[in-house]
Image 1 (cartoon, rainbow, N blue to C red):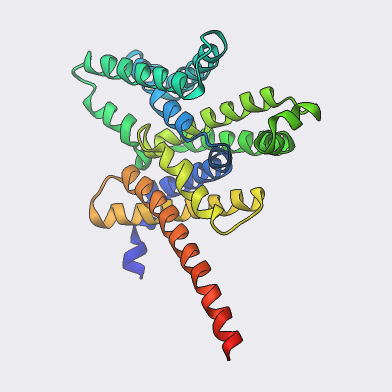
Image 2: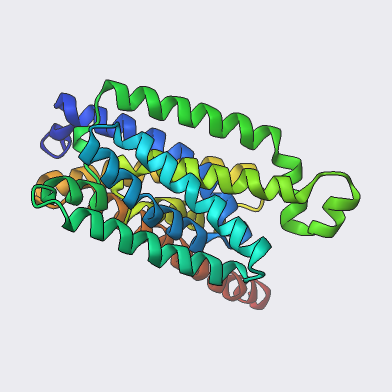
Length: 283
């Protein structure tokens, strides 16, 4: 067992685990709303929408996190503008900007011959390179997410259940939706360092789906999703270390597997209950 856990005695793996745990906390809270509100496509678009901003920031020497935030913010504003002025559906607006951002990012990356290594880190993450400054930024992001989620919980619930009723109750569903989009943007930007822009949705969806199979209350789902996400980070780091695989991709794959495994076990438990009840009556 000590041989298996040896990677966690290394300083950079410890930082990766702590950073991954903070990412799991952010994604556990935000991912629960993403699943409940059916915002997975938006999260995917935000993740890919960061690529142009990160690419420009890397080429110009600006902190990549700043470029990611600006690009993702522009993506969310653009989606809203297309829906309001162009009268396009949400999925059409997201799809248009999703492809445009991804294409623009690839164009920027391909224009620089020395961009290969940075591009790989952007797309698939570099959690083992997380430093103290990154941990501080993740801690701040986690604190903001927790405060905003707690303050807007009632409005988010009403928005999810019945937007018209939320309007009648004075809970301002349009503002609540904007805040939720902002939280998704923050989660995506915070998580890309760990798992990359291509895999960040795995951390948003996998643990939330896994937790939702066992809980019926939103807050409980968030808490369990954060725990499952942290476990996925730890298992992913161990698998990556011992198998020699990419850490970010392994973590994202483990997070998705947690959702599939949890859902499967829950379905099996439910199928066995009637049989157990029937055998008890027969006896």
